[in-house]
Length: 162
Image (cartoon, rainbow, N blue to C red):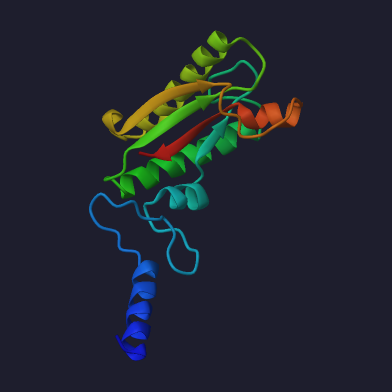
């Protein structure tokens, strides 16, 4: 095989390894060329809508200290509008807690947080079958540390695309 043929084959193999083709059953990234979030993707939800609401200590209702309450309702109203726009998307809401409390207590509290968040979106005309709710209790902290700032970040409900 000549040098030219080997070089051509090597170039074809190199380019084939660089190509990415998303087809049925192939995961695709939610980021477009240039770093922008693909509309309707998880990345779009996080970057342009907001994927989480926060709760006061030992609370599962959306009412809390201001400005927490207002931010929660703004975020959830934006999520409802996004879900109406992207009707093909189903979501999961994960309720989370800070590290304090027993595992059982935090699993129950996290479930109440997820259920409350789900109920708000359903009340905004999002079909209930499009939204699942799960609790992770204190098992999936988003902020590390044993201080009030970290605890406040970990008391949340996070919406993600399924």
